[in-house]
Image 1: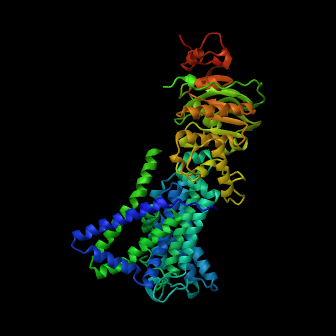
Image 2 (image 1 turned 180 degrees about the horizontal axis):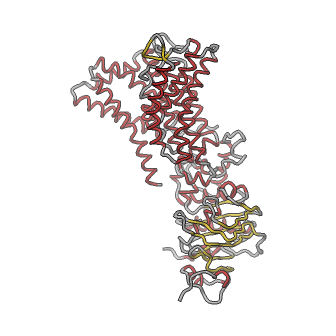
Image 3 (image 1 turned 90 degrees about the horizontal axis):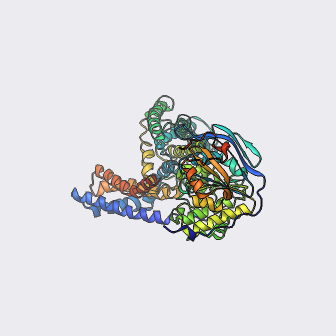
Length: 347
Length: 283
């Protein structure tokens, strides 16, 4: 396959909006009497100050690049799949079950626990996909509803079937044979990052290097032209939801068997909650491109990890840290939202 | 407007047409609202002829073509393409049986504007073994060399093969689309408003290509709201009015005025009564 670089222009747009977002954040901090310079310095040092911080930033980025992929593949197929959150919960459940309650030889156990999470995620994604194919239910409605069902179902399963008898607040921990190796002592980054990046890269090659990927993108780009080209619209829906579910399931798995120290799912789902929704912002910043999503996930990982030090050192209240995150997301999302609106208007 | 004499007339075929490549019998097609838009039409397109359908837009031409292209279900009737009787025609059936389709609205059906030139060059051909393997891998080397060939052969002006088709001019978009369809080596070309909105150079060029197809022994079904275009390159003409053919004949036998009147639903006396059986009469 020839290198097909269509990134540069979107990359420049994204960089410009990151700059605008940071400026707007600085104004906001200034308005509340904080020193933006000190805050950003702390943010940067917090995210990249030491090698361990860089690794921690990447650890934060790992699930985000995957949930971003869920949204991106949906958009490429012309669908708003905002069900990454629920698909990720089920992925975490599927992984917890195989990792914590099934004994398997090393190596195979990691693979099986990962695959189980991905399959649970994909299975959960099939509900809105089939509702769309059979009944024409709009995927935004069904995925939002499925997210809530997934939340309560996962909590129920975590407490009643996967609970750790010695600790009421979490599920049984993954057996050591099912844990991804931790890369260094001073960060929570594990080898699962390689699986995440490989999965994003594989989906990139799939979308741009195969006929099915071409047809999926054509279906999203111009449904009438897709029909003209003999593309089966239902196949596009199912395929995009399966890929998205696998990615979200892997994101859930990564937080169970790829993230110390818990190696388990909290009964509140606290160690996975919101990662799916955050992925939507990451996807927009990454311009709905699997590889752009990796870069954007690093940025969001840096905000998440560096934001802790910013709060601690520059005294910026945690609410303001979140507002800052929000401003940057909104600003970053402008070019993509603008492009989407323009595409709609033209059609 | 530019006078029509600027568009040079293309030469007419001297050879007699061959066997029918498209046979349509009593075709009925509904529109989006479920009302009958094509009310029992029968015709043939033969190899080596251009069969032109004239008419004011909105008289069922779009529905007729969409049915023939597999984009709209037929209510009743028969379609036989290149000798094969098709019950439920799909776009892939059309292409498999040697049909090519230059659609009415190139931006809606024929091209994906944010896809690049190379990607658009295989739109509707993406399943052909030349462009994707049995395992479903796209053969980018073949696609790029094919796209390059299209650009050269059909004079598509574009900065590069990775240019989004959105940024090409209308004429170049249509050259790409027409080139892609004609390079399928079809036996039947369905061309709808093939030169609408184009510059004169592209218009002349595309009409010449259709005539060249005819001369190579392909059947061409031309549907156009541009009467000049239909008169200029068709061998036989039918006029469509309210879902039916109100009149038809060889192009030499019909005058411009007659066709113009028929387009308005006014039938001349004493002509081809069978075709006019249920058409509204004028006073």
